[in-house]
Image 1 (cartoon, rainbow, N blue to C red):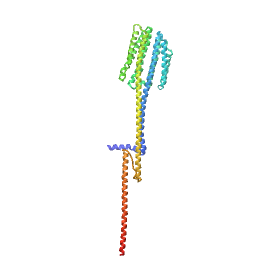
Image 2: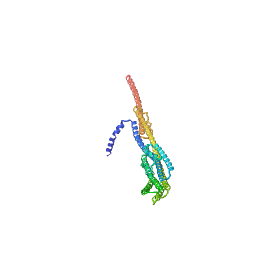
Image 3: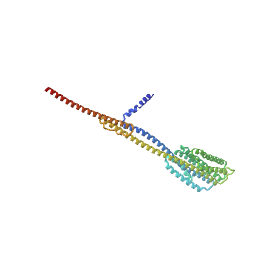
Image 4: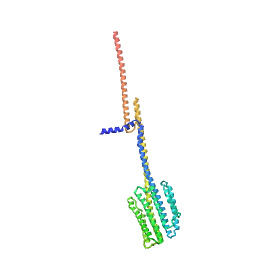
Length: 435
């Protein structure tokens, strides 16, 4: 089994081995470094892009909170204008307060236009233009001729404001918030509470007009009963979010309790003044009670918006800190990796050049070349072994040369002895001949 695995692995690695065998060592090292570094850079870029997208989402949602908050101010002024105009149709002198409300509405519209200019990325100006024209007409005194038409005109405008608020929430991503706590806060502050406030405002304006007129037809009474029921339903819708907020780690602000109490008191006042045998009560007191309930609901809404903005800002700050920490860590790791890779390449190539230089010197017959490689890796061990081999080979050659010299000297002595022996032999032969 092991042989089969080894055979398969060998065959699979053959193309790679053939490719690597055709490349220089320098090219191999640079290629492997690039294959290590570039995918890491791509992964880092993707990660940073995701983090930046999350930061942009939080920033866009913060902008959405500002836009929604400003729209609520415009809606409140429109509701106030509706109620005051209703009282005027019923016979009250509301010219002064209507002028102040229209001036405030104009100012709110101007500020909202500036807010659009600061956030062109959401493309909210074009859908807002027709509604803005209608609201500016209202601020300039272009109103319906009677109470019923005025109520329908204002209610339609407020409905359009709420629809536009939902559209702005979609464009800024506020309605699509991914976290439970911020989502429920958004739902309460920009959807549930505005609907609750609108029901209070409608009951305030229409009820005050009926009280001022002193009459209430049966169909009008049925309409007022339905408005009271609508107010109770919208108030309960806000109250029902208390459990969801608690489960997500948040809580309904304490001002909401005061708003619920004020709403219930206003409902009781409406029943007392409008649903008796005859219409009774003071229209100004009734209107003030409704205004107080709206003010407390707005106070609760502001607390919800403030908490929502705080959480979104905290999320954006945490994501920025996370991004900066990752960038710092990755830059440090990248620089350290490049530094270590360069150190490895430099030390490896120097050691390899030293080994190659020594091998060339030995091949040319120079056994005096020494290899100095500092380290404990395999290449350093190989260099040390080659240096030991050079020293041993040099010693062996020295011994051979010494022995050769000794043999040469011995040969010369032997030749001299043979020469002396030959001379003595010749002398003895000459003496023998003479004898």
